[in-house]
Length: 252
Image (cartoon, rainbow, N blue to C red; front, side, top):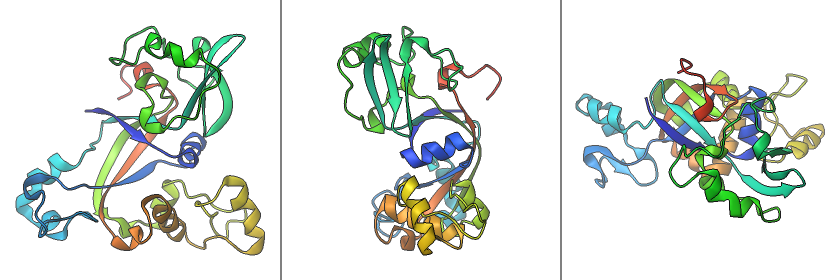
């Protein structure tokens, strides 16, 4: 079992909070015994057919798949620090509210870390105090979110290696693709929440969840990323609305 960070965009964080997202897919990168060899790996698509389908590479594949059941993934998302009369606060782009750092008791959204504890080297509260005591700071990239500021933890339950385009409609919905209230299709995941609702009246929506997911994949990974059909790790998980260091013993 391994603890590792994982980045999600604001719309995907909302899907996690709403209970709509219980899967994610991550491209399997170039590693293993054939790293750098064009006949085994491609810089564009990661693992090649010859690598995945060769029984002799089974041990390498297991080692190179960076996720396994039992792993805990702490979610990194866009965040911002600020101040109020009550002291330092933190907010997240995915949700509009500020939360008082010294008042987190786990009731608001289940985080509740004590920031005076040095859970992660270099990421104690005192380390970040100069930032949070300034005026409201800029939005910070998810990659710079420290472990203590994470409010969501994912417990991996299953990992499958498959081609991206093998995703089913059920899997696409588990990726957070949101159905229309009418049930006749799916909202466009590549635009804002409000815009996706407004354009439905003009017939702009997806009839299949997999079509919506393919558009989302291209919007994140670039044009033709879906057509490249890379090998991916299809990760299933349960969502825990808490900081990874406050998960109760025995839940993983």
